[in-house]
Length: 259
Image (cartoon, rainbow, N blue to C red; front, top):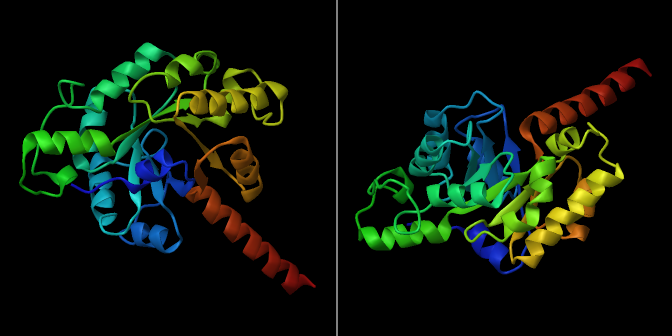
């Protein structure tokens, strides 16, 4: 089975970079990501119309490129985890995780017995249709699969220390937009309450030997996050990257035409 270089590099204290996909899928996308220097990609099925079948194709296209594919499921339900992992995802990004008990259950979905409840199919997409020892494949799957939890509610923030102490949780991902809504300060990203939350997440992750992850809509946000200890960085997302680049280019051309 393929290993997970992102998980391995994070365990060494390195910083990794990728992006998020909400809208655009094409056969060439993983190659474009690789050529752009992305270490990983999060495919978001919660806020998009992406299907499991489309994800299976994207995961297959990531093979051999060095881009590690992760998925945010449509919801927190075992069936979504099982289907996405079996289709080839290297890990899950779970939305609005609010307690240690919930985090422990999510970890169980990502692991085979005796450490979890993941159902077994071997010789399929997730292990590249290869033969081999079942026990060894289960061990390798547990080693490579990342369980990342989004801290994006007031309850999740309050319990972040206990959540990050759960064995098998690999990373805490800041959800700054939803967290601002939950804290009653929608869109006020400079608000002291949100800024304290940003630090609380990375501090809890570091105290428990875990990783703090986030999305940086601009490089300036990313610089700040990295100074504070965030080491898994999604630079923007497909809609934002396309819209901002297109808008900037058209604006420059229009100004030139009108001058």
